[in-house]
Image (tube, rainbow, N blue to C red; front, side, top):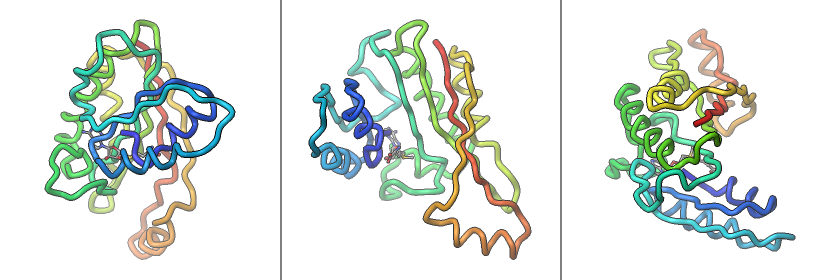
Length: 187
Ligand SMILES: C[S@@+](CC[C@H](N)C(=O)[O-])C[C@H]1O[C@@H](n2cnc3c(N)ncnc32)[C@H](O)[C@@H]1O
């Protein structure tokens, strides 16, 4: 779920080997372009089209660290809505969690024992009411065997859509969601 490639850029700057995956060919292209810069380091970085629910390209217990940044249900659609494999096309929160459980199971399988898996995820609203998306996804990671080491709160201000939501929140009397959870799991 490499998206526009922020994690890949950081890996190149910090000299970390990386396997970056995404289901969207456009994300693969964006990430490859984003990596086209001079850096002090030249780590091994592979960018591949792959569904996060099937990591059969990787052996059990072969990965040192995982960073996963999934869509937050369908808040932002990362591909054409016909493409069912893209989890950003799932509206129903429980169905989304079912698919994230498949991702979590694969992440657990490929991670080495005693190593960490981080996932960044936020919440949402439905009919003005708060939906605990992040906690529900976190519970699926616990279900497949991970232990929760930390819940780091990332403040989130001034996003592209903030202006639109400030106006709406005043009209409809709800608070803006201004944080995301960075869950750190241990295998
Ligand atoms: C929140 S974005 C990641 C943003 C990223 N952190 C960045 O710097 O741009 C989520 C990504 O998950 C990808 N994605 C959705 N379903 C997927 C799946 N089944 N397997 C792999 N990637 C998937 C989307 O295409 C999208 O690029």
